[in-house]
Amino acid sequence: MEQDQILDIAIRSGSILLKCGAETYRVEDTISRICKSYGLTCEAFVLPTGVFVSVEGQKGISTICKRIPSRTVDLTMISKVNDLSRRIEKSKPAYDEVIGELDRITQCEKYSNITIILCFAFTAFVYALLFGGSQYDALCALAVGIVLGFIRLVFSKGSSFPFIEYFVGGFAAGFLGSIAASLVPHSNAYVVTIGAVTNMLPGVALTNGIRDLLHGDSVSGLTRLGEALMVVAVIAAGTGIGLSIWFLGGSIQW
Image 1 (cartoon, rainbow, N blue to C red):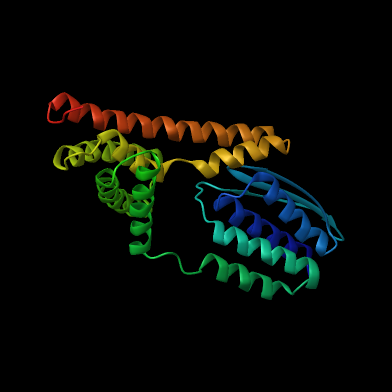
Image 2: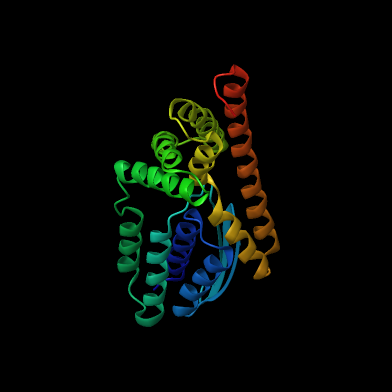
């Protein structure tokens, strides 16, 4: 396989992993494994917003960088790319075969809209119970979770400023949670809101940030932690404003 082809496979695999929320050390390790499997000396440097790869082989030194403008969480795609990298180590398949597999991974069927909405609703329902809420709180949280699922689908179509989604989602959770608590007897607006907001918390980003720090990737770790804390702050701001608007309206008993 040509050196440029090996570099193309490595950079595409790393980009998919980073876009899907993989840890920095995992992306660097996957890129290095792929290059070494085909006999190239590799140095990979990954940041949350870019992948930099330099390889040395028969054609000398080749370097490429790939910017990653946006990221999400897709553990299924991460698992598939990990499996592919291990298969490359064992059998060293041809370029066309690997590229075809990467194309299939990126084009694999996503969860349906109904499934996403149901997951938001079920998560809100369960967490409302876990936080000590009653069955009325859980049912209210389920209804608010459905709305948050629709909001997620609207913003998943593309946004140049992803923090808007978190602010709108937090506002909807606070405001609608207050409305639901006022309409349903024996329900608590705070429990309903907390159960619904749990859907948006950046648990994966926080975990990956800590894991990157433990692996010595200080820049990536601090960046991920900073981004996660910003997301939490935006969600809190939206939720607080939503609760305050209803509270100042005097339509709910706290």
